[in-house]
Image (cartoon, rainbow, N blue to C red; front, side):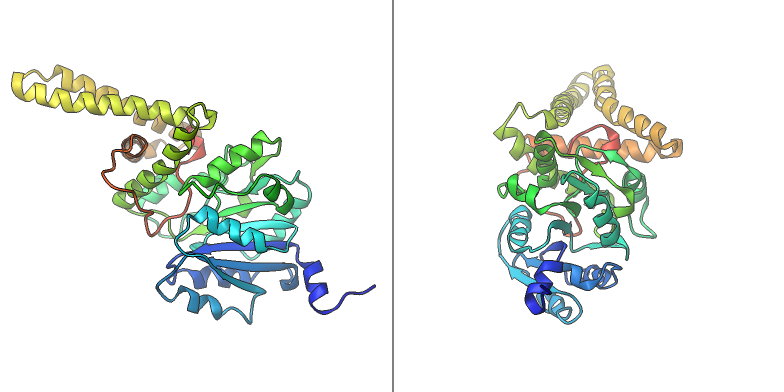
Length: 348
């Protein structure tokens, strides 16, 4: 029997694209416009935008796409992005779910390529790390430029460009609504523990307009993501996924305290040998991580900027994981859950 009208539309919806948003008036149009241009027939996917209480013109701009997309607009204010994504998934009609952040722009073949990979997969996670915008700063180029090339099994892919079977997502309970950030890493860990794959597929990468471009925005982003890691770690201190990050944090925190102590000692005694030693040990992880990354990328000129960025990463994560931020760290405005390069050897 041939289906018509709404019943046919429900049957043909294969992928549900879920876009969480909060005060994204500056980028949401570019994001949704990239979905309008998808090669996948428009009746085979739906777009669910879930607004988290925007006070700018985000909702108004989303509504302008009601005629060009199979669009549903939901609203749930004052929630973590994990809960916002889960709400979209509960209303989704597709066999597969695609999570796309509001500050990400997809290529025209994004959904078509994803559908091909999903149909040949096991229902687990596929996705990609973000591509940086053109004319990005040295900060973005040094830290993020090579991430989209990651391929095959990975510890996680960012939730801003993540696909999964709707059935598997529901079976695993979705994202943890109690986690403010790094919810993508925690979710991917559960996906892997359940026996499903977590795969990076480079052709699914999207351009992340919110890529940190300055040292201050990079530091704030790492500080913010560290709060999510701290939440998960305090729940389960034996969580294997965060072991390396925790060890790095303890090491960095110890030598940060030692550095402060040796500065005072040098002022009082005039002996600078302990201070030099503390500085050297504090720089060991950033230097080791930078050399490893430069070797894997074959970009030895990037060692110096990477040392600085890895140092900021270590300090930010140490401060946030130890709960020493002095106030609740807020999500950086130009940010999306993608904390650290998987090829640098550390968990989120």
